[in-house]
Every structure is written in structure tokens, then in C-alpha cells.
Length: 179
Image 1 (cartoon, rainbow, N blue to C red):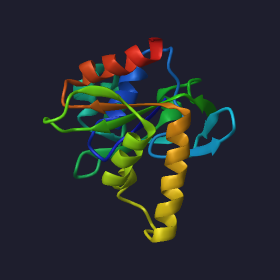
Image 2: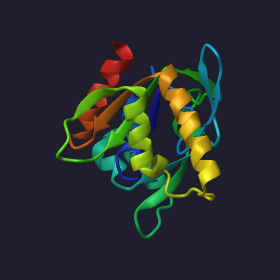
Image 3: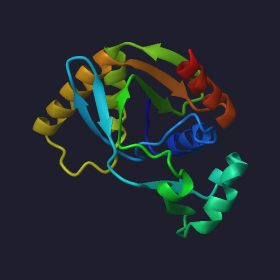
Image 4: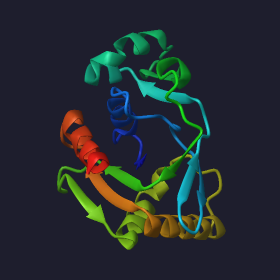
């Protein structure tokens, strides 16, 4: 499962919520490589660090010790080594079956399944959930659109509105995983 959303929508909080249970593994934080094959979408790890905020320990008490060990900047953000946090649970690759897109908008319902065109529209509206794109031109826009169009046709896509409590949002994700 990939959790994708604009900054501040709860990606890290929900990921760490899942990782409280030993059944879940970690691939990557802010980005990963994807290979679209004829019968699968395979994701590969890109980094071994996780960017966390100081409020993570307020949401998931289990991580308070880990947050205390991270050097935080003046805005309460820091970088954590996931191999230290999740020994033997960091994976190099996996097959992607589900994408959960995140938003935070009190005027929208909390959860729904999306069609590929709706998911692509979301990504376009949210600038591909990436405020750090180095190149923004028509060619790159076309490449990004084609990639996400193909990806969203090969996986299940859901939109999760993280206006509920982190635990309620986490429960919705867990229900997707266990069916």
C-alpha cells in the first residue's frame, strides 16, 4: 500500500500507526521508485530515513522514546533512521496493490473509492502532492500524468479525508488491508 498526500495530511502519522503492529513493514518515506509491469506494480525503497514531527509521540505513545532521540528543528521536525526503529521490518521492495490518497477537507466525506480518472484529477489538483518538483514544464507534466494514469488503472485507489482522529483514519486503512 502506498499512502500519498500533500504535506500535513497525515502520511507519516498513519504509517507509524500501522507500524505499531508487527504485521506491517516499511518501504520508504517521502518517495519510492515504481516499475509498472504488465501484471504488477513493483515499488522499491529510495531512502532509509523517515521525516517525523514532534507531535507523532502525542498521537502514538509507543514512539515517544524514538521522537526524543531525534534532533528536531525549530519547527518540531526531524529525521529518524527507520532501521533503528523497525529492525528487520524494512523492506527493499514490494508489490503495490492499493493507493490511499490523503486530503484534509472538512467539507468532504471521510472515505471513498476512486476511479482512475478521479485519482488522476486529484493528483493534478494537488500538484502531484509534491511541492518540491525540480522541473515543472509541459513535458514533465505529461510524463507524470501518463505514469499516474497507468498506475491508477492497475491498483485500487481510495481517498481518505484525515479530518477524523488519527485512530479512525488508521482503522479505515486497516480495514482495506484485512478486507
